[in-house]
Length: 276
Ligand code: HPA
Image 1 (spheres, rainbow, N blue to C red):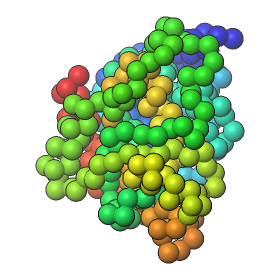
Image 2: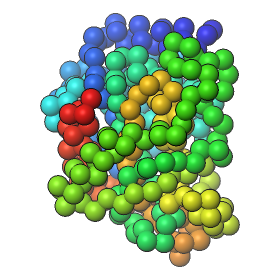
Image 3: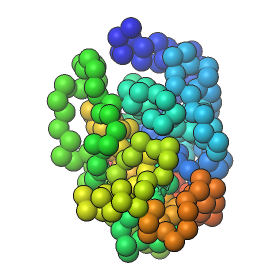
Image 4: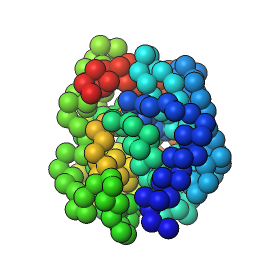
């Protein structure tokens, strides 16, 4: 089946349940699991209800779309995302992003938990993603181009929209939250990186490392969405951290900083929507 046909089928399944047209799409990363309470929910669809949809298998990652207003902004929320390390090709990983585009979303806000590589970072910091390195994972656009969404060879010189990103930065300032800025590198996972890999990533110009986001940003940019993204630095990366890394540590730190992260995302949505 052609990818666009598959997407059209998924959209049909969504449209059977709701005719909600979002302005903004939001992907919740680790630590924002509780964000659902911020949504004045008009409709909810489990990923399992959509035939052909990849499902999240990670603990702490639910799998559902929420539709409703967040801080007055018409938003579709992905409560739980799918990762490459779960065994899905990156084309499947980005299917939900493309689907949210077809629902009508003009902008995408991505969030995640990430390991800090920049020596100036501490656990609990927030980082605005200004650019990314995605070459360690397969490009999600590999395969027949989905002409209905975008061109074969899309430009990626400004994946993260400057105006939206600046709006997030201003929002953080207004909230008194220090927001760092930097480059995110996506690794495949599921293992954390080795110290030598983290040194390599630092030399390549990465400030933070994680197992999601970059492929989603590529697919969104290809499909003409304006993208912004924020990482919660949940730990120092391998070799920088003096202790072995665990998923529990990542989850714990992300949970601890959830109130700040939630406030930043909630206010940012409003700022972003005013630029659309
Ligand atoms: N490495 C990769 N992914 C991550 C990390 C990390 O240190 N922390 C949170 N997600």
